[in-house]
Image 1 (cartoon, rainbow, N blue to C red):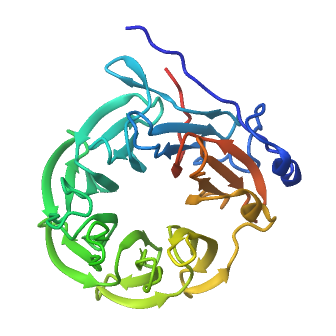
Image 2: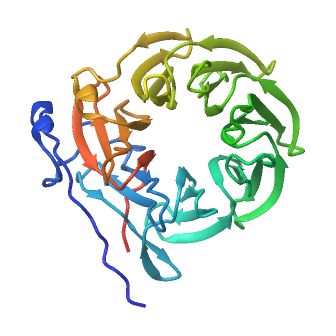
Length: 386
């Protein structure tokens, strides 16, 4: 089989913020990001999953190399020895576990498993309308809407599929609430945020709690309508966001104590479209639709998870967030340096962007991605394209 050569774009401009404001498109290699490499467990780079536009092969995978400053777009993914450009449709989630990378492609009804160092295809697990993935021991757990039709009156409940990561076989499934989204694992239990997003206006408002030993739902926690994101902090508390209904019920963030499985706090931070925990900090970004304004509400917040107080209402300190980022769709934080990345889906443009910031919130670079950039995964391993 003839193999396609690797494609890379050497992007973009690790220059001063003022120059970035005037620049457009790709330039030459920006060079390495300061402070991102070095040390036994240094971060080598990060992968970016671009959701695409729901057309065949529009979901793509990119990689940024911290040491060289090279950004590789639309990595050639080797399936059965032949290089293919593009993953599939509806890229919802991307996570690494062990030596592998797992891409949940809800539109294509599968989870693609790739080698973390080469991006070679290792295997595929068929899961209709898969959403998010988490891991513990030898198993992966994927939330899925199932075969339901959007906005139908008889939508079945969603489920979680339990996958053996050695054989890449589904070994069990567990029915949960309607249209399940993100999950966390704590104390031998799997917590699943149910959205009911296809049940409008009767959203689901529960977190399903699965006992991992029996892989059965033990009970549900009543939280708020249209749940979405979940994060586990260092103190064992679970943070879960509600999208609300865009009208009367606002998007909010809640804290669940896994000891009692009760909601212990409701935080009116700001509407939340994505969040991530790093150390004692919860980073929150918002890009939610406001039905009254007929526009997107955009905002940022930094929360101390120990005190549960808002530390800052801005993550970016140099003015570039409001000047440059249009549709923040995701945020990721380098666990070693606290540098962070904001993915901009750029809804009205053919390509997305990822903005690189120092821990202090100063811009370091801008990368042009595939359409609908959202999920960012840091890795200790250097990419070695075949």
